[in-house]
Image (cartoon, rainbow, N blue to C red; front, side, top):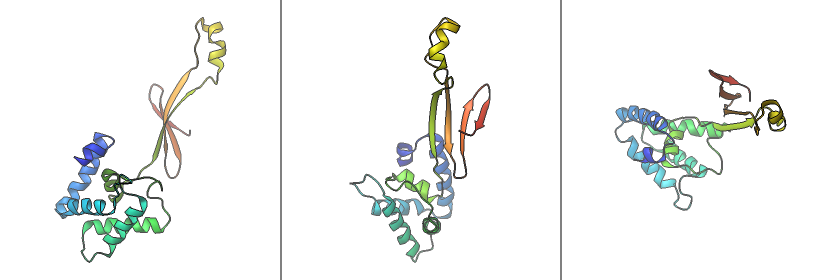
Length: 165
Protein backbone atom coordinates (compact mmCIF):
# COMPACT_ATOMS: atom_id res chain seq x y z
CA UNK A 1 0.00 0.00 0.00
CA UNK A 2 2.93 2.38 0.59
CA UNK A 3 3.90 2.20 -3.07
CA UNK A 4 0.34 2.93 -4.17
CA UNK A 5 0.04 5.82 -1.72
CA UNK A 6 3.42 7.47 -2.31
CA UNK A 7 4.18 6.57 -5.93
CA UNK A 8 3.73 9.48 -8.35
CA UNK A 9 2.17 7.20 -10.98
CA UNK A 10 1.07 3.65 -11.62
CA UNK A 11 3.98 3.12 -14.02
CA UNK A 12 6.71 4.27 -11.65
CA UNK A 13 5.28 2.19 -8.80
CA UNK A 14 5.07 -0.77 -11.18
CA UNK A 15 8.78 -0.42 -12.06
CA UNK A 16 9.75 -0.35 -8.38
CA UNK A 17 7.49 -3.35 -7.74
CA UNK A 18 9.27 -5.26 -10.52
CA UNK A 19 12.68 -4.58 -8.98
CA UNK A 20 11.40 -5.54 -5.54
CA UNK A 21 9.91 -8.79 -6.87
CA UNK A 22 13.34 -9.75 -8.25
CA UNK A 23 14.96 -8.95 -4.88
CA UNK A 24 12.27 -10.92 -3.03
CA UNK A 25 13.03 -13.99 -5.17
CA UNK A 26 16.61 -13.87 -3.89
CA UNK A 27 15.67 -13.03 -0.30
CA UNK A 28 12.05 -13.16 0.93
CA UNK A 29 12.91 -11.07 4.02
CA UNK A 30 14.38 -8.06 2.17
CA UNK A 31 11.22 -5.92 2.17
CA UNK A 32 10.68 -6.30 5.92
CA UNK A 33 14.28 -5.30 6.61
CA UNK A 34 14.01 -2.31 4.25
CA UNK A 35 10.92 -1.13 6.14
CA UNK A 36 12.80 -1.57 9.45
CA UNK A 37 15.80 0.46 8.21
CA UNK A 38 13.53 3.21 6.93
CA UNK A 39 11.56 3.41 10.18
CA UNK A 40 14.70 3.27 12.34
CA UNK A 41 16.11 6.44 10.75
CA UNK A 42 12.99 8.34 9.71
CA UNK A 43 11.63 11.03 11.96
CA UNK A 44 8.01 11.86 12.70
CA UNK A 45 9.02 15.52 12.99
CA UNK A 46 10.51 15.48 9.48
CA UNK A 47 7.71 13.27 8.08
CA UNK A 48 10.23 10.90 6.52
CA UNK A 49 13.91 10.20 6.03
CA UNK A 50 16.48 13.00 5.75
CA UNK A 51 19.78 12.74 3.87
CA UNK A 52 21.58 12.21 7.18
CA UNK A 53 19.14 9.43 8.04
CA UNK A 54 19.75 7.75 4.68
CA UNK A 55 23.53 7.83 5.16
CA UNK A 56 23.17 6.46 8.71
CA UNK A 57 20.96 3.62 7.49
CA UNK A 58 23.43 2.80 4.70
CA UNK A 59 26.39 2.82 7.09
CA UNK A 60 24.54 0.55 9.50
CA UNK A 61 23.67 -1.82 6.65
CA UNK A 62 27.25 -1.80 5.32
CA UNK A 63 28.70 -2.65 8.74
CA UNK A 64 26.19 -5.44 9.32
CA UNK A 65 27.70 -8.95 9.57
CA UNK A 66 24.84 -10.32 7.45
CA UNK A 67 25.47 -10.70 3.73
CA UNK A 68 22.11 -9.53 2.39
CA UNK A 69 21.07 -7.97 -0.92
CA UNK A 70 20.39 -4.52 0.55
CA UNK A 71 23.93 -4.41 1.93
CA UNK A 72 25.21 -4.15 -1.66
CA UNK A 73 22.65 -1.40 -2.40
CA UNK A 74 23.85 0.53 0.66
CA UNK A 75 27.50 0.09 -0.34
CA UNK A 76 26.80 1.48 -3.81
CA UNK A 77 25.00 4.49 -2.33
CA UNK A 78 27.84 5.18 0.10
CA UNK A 79 30.35 5.02 -2.77
CA UNK A 80 28.29 7.53 -4.75
CA UNK A 81 27.97 9.76 -1.69
CA UNK A 82 31.73 9.57 -0.98
CA UNK A 83 32.41 10.47 -4.63
CA UNK A 84 30.38 13.65 -4.14
CA UNK A 85 27.31 12.59 -6.08
CA UNK A 86 24.11 14.14 -4.74
CA UNK A 87 21.69 11.33 -3.93
CA UNK A 88 18.81 13.78 -3.65
CA UNK A 89 18.22 17.41 -2.68
CA UNK A 90 19.94 18.17 0.62
CA UNK A 91 16.82 19.54 2.35
CA UNK A 92 14.50 16.93 0.86
CA UNK A 93 12.75 14.36 3.03
CA UNK A 94 12.21 10.88 1.59
CA UNK A 95 8.98 8.94 1.85
CA UNK A 96 9.23 5.16 2.03
CA UNK A 97 8.63 5.02 -1.73
CA UNK A 98 11.46 7.52 -2.35
CA UNK A 99 13.74 5.55 -0.01
CA UNK A 100 13.11 2.36 -2.00
CA UNK A 101 13.83 4.20 -5.26
CA UNK A 102 17.14 5.53 -3.95
CA UNK A 103 18.17 2.16 -2.51
CA UNK A 104 17.28 0.38 -5.76
CA UNK A 105 19.52 2.78 -7.69
CA UNK A 106 16.79 4.59 -9.58
CA UNK A 107 17.82 8.05 -10.72
CA UNK A 108 15.80 11.18 -10.18
CA UNK A 109 15.85 14.06 -12.64
CA UNK A 110 14.33 17.52 -12.54
CA UNK A 111 11.44 17.95 -14.96
CA UNK A 112 9.67 21.22 -15.77
CA UNK A 113 6.63 22.16 -17.79
CA UNK A 114 7.39 25.28 -19.84
CA UNK A 115 4.69 27.41 -21.39
CA UNK A 116 5.58 30.62 -23.18
CA UNK A 117 4.55 32.99 -25.96
CA UNK A 118 6.61 32.20 -29.07
CA UNK A 119 5.55 35.53 -30.65
CA UNK A 120 7.34 37.38 -27.80
CA UNK A 121 4.38 39.77 -27.40
CA UNK A 122 3.88 40.35 -31.14
CA UNK A 123 0.54 38.50 -31.19
CA UNK A 124 -0.93 40.65 -28.42
CA UNK A 125 0.06 43.88 -30.20
CA UNK A 126 -0.78 42.97 -33.81
CA UNK A 127 -3.32 40.10 -33.85
CA UNK A 128 -6.38 42.40 -33.95
CA UNK A 129 -5.04 44.31 -36.90
CA UNK A 130 -3.86 41.27 -38.85
CA UNK A 131 -6.52 38.69 -37.94
CA UNK A 132 -9.47 40.75 -36.70
CA UNK A 133 -9.30 38.95 -33.38
CA UNK A 134 -7.20 39.64 -30.28
CA UNK A 135 -4.78 36.99 -28.98
CA UNK A 136 -2.65 37.39 -25.88
CA UNK A 137 0.02 35.18 -27.40
CA UNK A 138 0.88 32.19 -29.52
CA UNK A 139 1.51 29.64 -26.85
CA UNK A 140 4.06 26.88 -26.92
CA UNK A 141 4.48 24.26 -24.24
CA UNK A 142 7.18 21.69 -23.70
CA UNK A 143 8.52 19.36 -21.04
CA UNK A 144 12.12 20.09 -20.08
CA UNK A 145 14.21 17.33 -18.50
CA UNK A 146 17.54 18.06 -16.85
CA UNK A 147 19.76 15.03 -17.50
CA UNK A 148 23.23 14.91 -15.93
CA UNK A 149 24.96 15.56 -19.27
CA UNK A 150 22.44 17.92 -20.91
CA UNK A 151 18.94 19.36 -20.83
CA UNK A 152 16.26 18.42 -23.35
CA UNK A 153 12.94 19.98 -24.25
CA UNK A 154 10.30 17.60 -25.57
CA UNK A 155 7.43 19.13 -27.51
CA UNK A 156 4.73 18.17 -29.96
CA UNK A 157 4.38 19.68 -33.42
CA UNK A 158 2.65 17.01 -35.49
CA UNK A 159 5.24 14.57 -34.09
CA UNK A 160 7.26 14.42 -30.89
CA UNK A 161 10.46 16.49 -31.03
CA UNK A 162 13.47 16.90 -28.78
CA UNK A 163 15.54 20.09 -28.78
CA UNK A 164 17.86 22.14 -26.58
CA UNK A 165 15.78 24.37 -24.28
